[in-house]
Length: 562
Image (cartoon, helix red, strand yellow):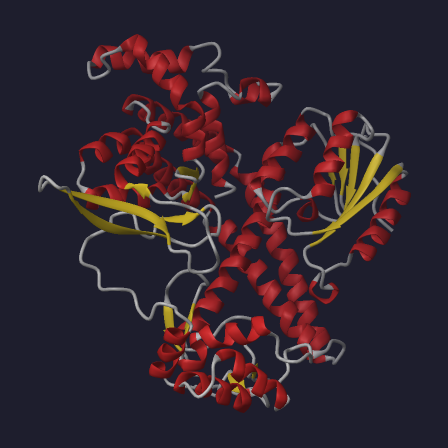
């Protein structure tokens, strides 16, 4: 039975029960959708909450764009419901964008009440406590993803292909001991090896080799006669010759410890017979932007090549073209000259350019917000301590049940790793909350400094400095039909949203290199009725989304959602 409350009674009258699991695999989820729904229906009944609809979905809360989640919020915005019943806040969101949307709707009383298994969330609550709660779930997901990627990277560095699905002829070793092989040949390995050697030696064409292998009984992974697509994937896969690429499309190769089917010269002979390139030619020129972009059509890397044109009159012209490597599939994208590409780089950098005086003002405002945050730190610490104590109890309970033989070993190992990671996250938040604030402010200072100077430095710098600037931009750059695409990281995206208006306002105080003008501009930023509105007095955050101060608010929120 759940403890009832009788103060701060919620004003909500119609609730949506929302349930989510991260994957389709039921055994990998702490609580299935069915169990979440059963538990929360009981909670709703105990508290007399009127559930008008049950909505559920399978998908990661770490990513935005969940259809059912967005549909739920749209129903609430339309007035079809005004409360949410959910197992834990982590089921609603593990990312800062959706978390911010939930908190905004709660503060505006579009959502009048959120009920979880252990507490209520009301519009009158201190939003900082919800920031921390969502921050814990976000950081847990980030840590889990980082641990997974780190594990796969370490496996690759040890010489073992980290993919879950191995190419035909190999299998993952089960119940291996420390130091033993992690990937072994299976009962199809010898036939695959024969086929590769037939093609490498010229004894058979690829098609003839496939027909012979089918006649010998070689099948695909589903038991069907060896498919043509699978056979050609085998022919070009370097794993059979002792190396593999990781991550896919990165051009980073690792030596494989798995048993080789053929030697490297045989693999290269196969590529020659297939009409593919053997090796990239030695680099004779520095290509500053190679490796920074991907093709917007097929996802391959963008590379570069130099060309020389000699006219009839003897004049020589040199050109540098950037283009898709077209390594994965057919691609219709054409080339772009370096001059056109750099003009687009400049245009992108100009969209984040801000006056240095605005940079100084923003950092001072962020530091003021830090002081307010430190004053309220006691509540944050209390929440972090409570979460830490809860995960320690779960760990103790798990170990006790394992010792008593009440849980199987595979379940124990999986939950132990999950709880240890959660404990690590809680402890980090508990012990380093001030340090993370200071580190984040330092990062924001560097980002704003970059935004203030990058455009000018790119114009004046050589090709090496220009490459460093584009690397520091940290964007997902792509080329499609000769047009540069970029997804800026936060907070540079925040800067980009306001840079144009900032520059227009700064022109009223030019030249800003004069101390008096600069001081007047900073005073204008701080005292303008729109720009200087304190965050605590704003009723509707969307109403000031175009103000300069929203940049500061957006950046400081990154402290809890780094």
